[in-house]
Length: 75
Image (cartoon, rainbow, N blue to C red; front, side, top):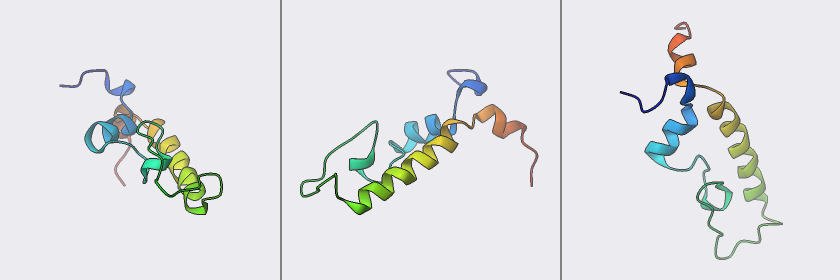
């Protein structure tokens, strides 16, 4: 049984509940941010790229509900 209606549960909710933050690194996480010991955040090219990756994937995962996925035709 689900705790909420399937149209209120996003893929992001499921992933965060099972695996934790969507970000690939702690310094790019919105929900579990941790600064790297030796990182210069304002000039770190990897971090800037991973923030873009996080934002893009979060946008998709946060806009797709379990209900919508269940209703989608199989390919």
